[in-house]
Image (cartoon, rainbow, N blue to C red; front, side, top):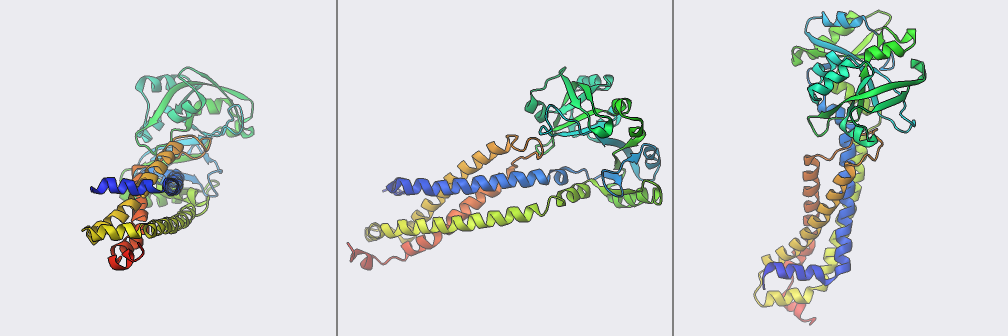
Length: 380
């Protein structure tokens, strides 16, 4: 008798039990994949941060605006290759629940600072030529059904005077990497100054600085902060990755929470699957004894039980990760958290599923291998 038909016959012996065991792996790996996608969303800014970019914010936090005049002073500092500024807008589209990031930028500078965001040249030219033009991310456009040329009204926040501001969708950007955030909207800074109250002019939200030598980034950061020390608007400069990591820490220790939940789930799954395989081996004690009696080796019996456990784990894991990937591609957070399931996470999930199946089947398989033919046949 060949190995595969015997394996399939054992899996079909108790169909409900096999289906339920596979289902436990489906749920566990679905949760694993979803937690991995959430973790990737929180770490997105850290993982894609440019090694040669610095973020300059107000010393008391990102909500403290900085003078526009700082831009040229930063540009003249040694080690600074380029500098741009950006300002948070915070408008509302139809309903406050429709949250997405909105930044006021200078078109001539932003594209140069962030080449990883790709926009066709003709679309970017149309955006630069229209003071009411905006650039939207591909996922954001898909979320709301926007297309090029659409009229887009946003209700401005009270600190920019409120009221309805009119925009035109002139370009759609796409990230060059899977983890790039495609849920942003960029508007023209000169339109912000034109519409904002007088107190909103002459200030910006933060600066992004490109350094000539990434190895000297910390020295340049210190020089920037020293330049504006003891001024009315002191600064705090960090590398882009440090800025993103600090923002992530405000949400708590997400990675520890994910690891704790995942560990509990897989320990429980290991016990359940191990118990299931132990019961399956106990039920087939006589059959295994007969197989040994007619010439099947101990190694064959060991491999048969292990293979059964690992097939259940592999099938359940594959289904669970498939559903998790589909869920991660949906905008279940309303644009707040750009989730994605990386290839590394999928590979880790597959490895964990197979390893769990191996560990769960190991003790029952060893028990079957050590089964005494004489003692087992006495029960026949």
